[in-house]
Length: 164
Image (cartoon, rainbow, N blue to C red; front, top):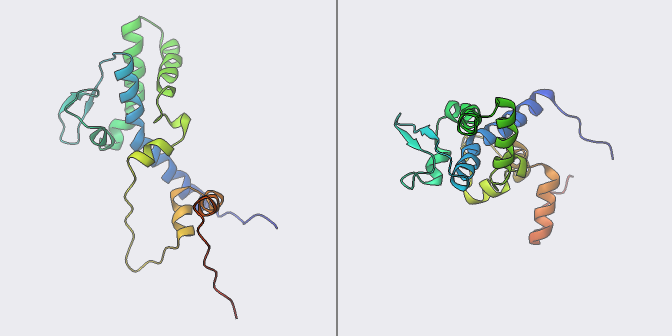
């Protein structure tokens, strides 16, 4: 069986969706690293107020809700904070930052499973659109093989329509 032909525009859309998921969930890994290593780092809430990322007043779900721009620049601020606190070069602090982030189950290096399972994404689709489970898996970047494995794991049969 030959592999399914790929559409470069479709592939780009899937990669963009995966990238958007990483941006959304990345602050959770930073929050874990800061909490586990007593690092004080402020983030900007969507309301514009600054708060310590480990402050008990801010729930993990609120950390996910920061604006994408805040999440994207969070890594650089995290590295700079480590460099400043330790008196290290940016290169050394960058290596240390990734080591600290990778300790978190929410780290992008550890996959998106823990974050998505604990904080499932909400999907909005047009009522006029028809999305099969397979199409939804493709849009989420899960892939058909992972969907097939879950169906098998859960004992779900695939409904096949006969073609006449």
